[in-house]
Length: 99
Image 1 (cartoon, rainbow, N blue to C red):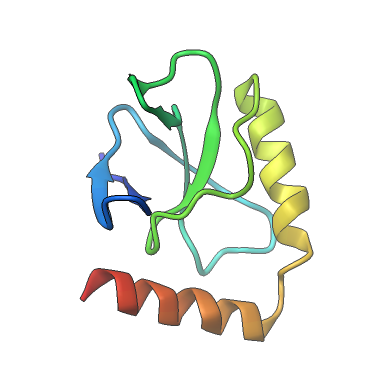
Image 2 (cartoon, rainbow, N blue to C red):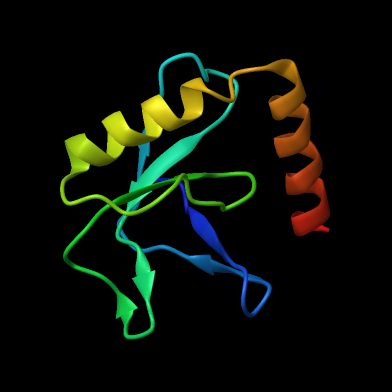
């Protein structure tokens, strides 16, 4: 399976996420999203779930209590940004972070 990473904005680095799984988000076939346990100061949480985007490693909003709620929440949040302009911003951010 694919190795997914989240971006740590404090230490400015990508962190591999154990047991992350790809999820399909309606209307976003061109980008890859994954569901994972969010990272906390103590390590990876076992209490909640988060959706992140694979190329940037950026999370979509806050963590949620269940997988299905996390997917629903991210789908609704992303629906507001489903424009060519936002896709371009994501592509540029990925380039900048991955260099």
